[in-house]
Structures are given as C-alpha cells and as structure tokens.
Image (cartoon, rainbow, N blue to C red; front, side, top):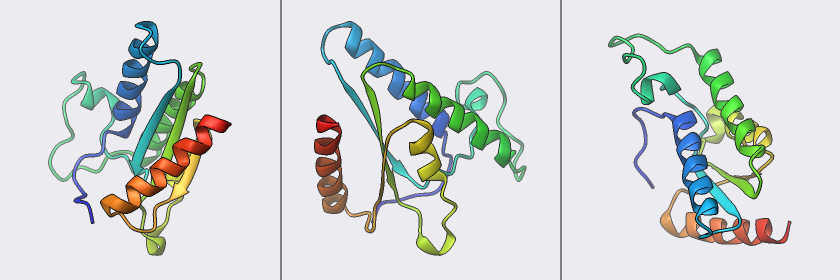
Length: 138
C-alpha cells in the first residue's frame, strides 16, 4: 500500500498537469496528454493557499469542503476544455467511506474513472496501462 494523508492540493495538481501538458504540446513533444490522478478525490488545500497567494489555515481550522469541491470540479472542467487532454482518475477511496468525489472529478473532466481495488505498485501499473490503452482508442 502507498502512504497517504496530509495536504491534498488537488486543484493545484490538475492545474500544474494542465500547464505541463500545454507546454509539451506547444513544443511539439506530444499531441495528446493523459493526466493520471491517483487518489480519493478529497482536497483539503485551497488553490490560493497552494499557490502561495493566501496564508494557510490556522492550526485546527477546517477548510470549507463545499468551496474546495467547487474549486476542484471547476478545475477539472477546465481540463476537459483543453484540446487533446484526457483525465484518468484512479480512485483509491475505501468502500466503507465512499464519497464518490473521484468519480465526480472524472465526470467533470469528461475523463475515465476506475476504482483501484488495491493500491499496490503492480495494481496501479496494470490498471493504468489498460486504461491508457482505452484512452488511445477513444
């Protein structure tokens, strides 16, 4: 299993992936970009904080979950609007506490969603290889 917990600036991660992909497309290095996001979909760091435009929340303060979700889904929608981009969302969320956020992210980005039953390196590699193959043919 993989380590987890801590800060999850998912909107920042998707935004950075988009910028990296756009730069690779502009340079002619790639035509299509596949962004692979492995996680449960739960963000807990606002984009303005992860970009350094706002101070982190005070210790013990809870972030506004609704605002974080809205920000993340809006970022995913922006990814969907980019030509030649696809999102591959691998959901690591435990079935007992499923929120469905990873699926919502994939839907907002018009990407592919897969439930990752085990978060071992081999399981991630196998699922990712198969999913990227599907994206190439769609």
